[in-house]
Image 1 (cartoon, rainbow, N blue to C red):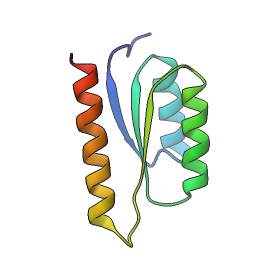
Image 2 (cartoon, rainbow, N blue to C red):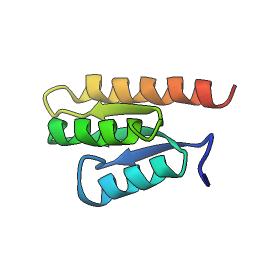
Image 3 (cartoon, one colour):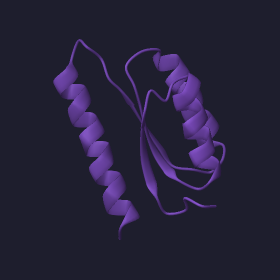
Length: 87
């Protein structure tokens, strides 16, 4: 568990390299904030896979329809994660 008690923000986590990085980091013990702009269903699958490894995940799905709201939700996720990690 090389990444135990660490938090990682992974962009493009819904598929390909991002998915591979997310699942590897989860196996190594990291808590995850997973970001994707497209394919919400694929991001949800990655979240389920990482949570099945007993890791905490916070998905952030960015949409072009509301970039401000999406960015704010990811920022809040990061703040909440940081508070819980560094206590």
